[in-house]
Image 1 (cartoon, rainbow, N blue to C red):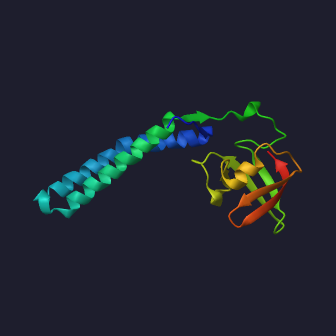
Image 2 (image 1 turned 90 degrees about the vertical axis):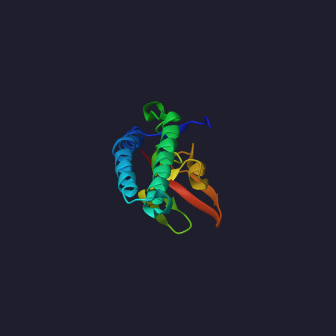
Length: 156
């Protein structure tokens, strides 16, 4: 899995902070939980101990996944990218020509995508359709429900 993951500086910092917290306070809290469960007696019939050990496994899996993600992370420097076309980390205002509603999206990596926050992945059908397009262009995105048409109103 050597494919790069493109992240904003802010998202990289968030992930590094999350990893640090999981490795320090997360592991410490998990050790305390296991110690408390162990104190309840016979481990062969101790459901609390089993649950704590399962939770520890999930914590270690999350840490491992974050470490893998961060090892492949590359911060995107948008300063050298053209300002007149859509690229990763572009924020665009678009008009959905199917329903005349206007939306504002930021194009991000799959790992940062969050539609509720207006962040769409560059490899999603809609995100991929916007890549490389210019102001005023009509963009067609093939989605499961058909074809969506957008007009690019602004590129930041």
